[in-house]
Image (cartoon, rainbow, N blue to C red; front, side, top):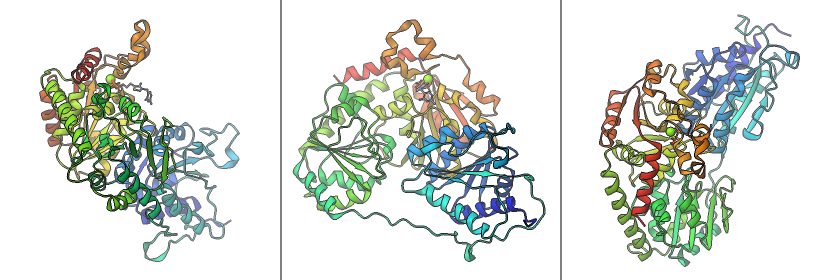
Length: 566
Ligand SMILES: Cc1ncc(C[n+]2csc(CCOP(=O)(O)OP(=O)(O)O)c2C)c(N)n1
Ligand SMILES: [Mg+2]
């Protein structure tokens, strides 16, 4: 064997291939076994490196940056439980189709299964959650080693981008010495001209003319249709608007679909469904995930024709109500179908009816909300979305925030919405928001809307947050526990409810943030929430706006809104 430094060469070749293929962000949590790759990442000026203590926060930060940018982000851990702490973010990346290059350092084979320190079985650690797994093997100088390492680097980027995008896992065994030996590198130069080892492209799917014709015929045959859009529709709002406008159909859009804008958008389907006032469509076309809102889903699942556009073959149909499924890109299909629809514009009595219901419901909701001085969680969601400048990104936490956003936010354009809805966890959220802010790079404000437990679950994500040069405002609805459970049947079991579900903590969230050097304010009046958020954005840096609310009172207020529409 030559004395060349194979570990350093492998690390350099991987990082070089990632940079050639467009990777600009990497995240690591320190450890010794990962040293060769950590040093190569730190040395490469094309890639910005963020360092976290907690691997879970590191992975969710990478997830946020990748979600916001659409570009793969590399994330590196040392061996052992460190690698296991990536798992939650890997699962979210899988289900939300986010490109992540997950690198776990490992002991070489001769140290495995021997009680060697910090050694677990890392082979296929994340199971089927990853789109590609490679046991890279301990680096050695062998013929064409450079070709092998470079092709792994290039292919890991390609595999993470799919489609569908998702996490890939490189398990990297390193032998000591783990720091550069000073020996020459193995011959492993990249292609001339700075191009990736293998330039890999996926041909964009054009819409199949027969499928387009079938969809257009279905629209032409049914005036009483609706489009429903959950997260991940992949359709630009202009395309959805043009299709809906030609069809004369309303768009029932969860804000996190980015399609709650334009004249056909209906934002009040939750209270309308609860009041039994949702008109009965003959046909429902679902793009993206199902709505989060259960009353509306239950109402629409009963439509005689339920069409599911399924770009990634994921059958996003938990109610099993789809009568027809189209495997393919919604964007190309809607764009082409809109051309073939015998347009019902400018007037469709079906759409007019929906818009009239929307106007009545919107006015009733807004009147109620505006009359309440103490912060109501639904109003906070509505007002934060309404006040933000064009170009802002809102990252919504699971539990009630994502539901209140769906129930109360009025249609508007100019916002981008993100949420961890692949697996609906409340974990890693602080770090996700900060990762989004990293990718946004000051291009527009980034605001997180989250519950108190969601903040506390990843309070550690605030470590160093003030020093990362990031701008992000975290609007925390502090109802001292899990407010969502008060809406569920568990609420009828008072004996154990607070202990087992509500889980109050009594923690001063501003003091927690202050311990990490993060400033914030507490806002007790509903009308002051939006100004406080705008002040925080203006001040810059990472800031908290804590809005105290009351779990029981919050349920009452929601019921008052539902009752008002009955
Ligand atoms: C990682 C993870 N653990 C547990 C849950 C279950 N869970 C769903 S909502 C919730 C409470 C969240 O409380 P908070 O963030 O304060 O929001 P609120 O319910 O008050 O709106 C919990 C524990 C989950 N979704 N994800
Ligand atoms: Mg809460």
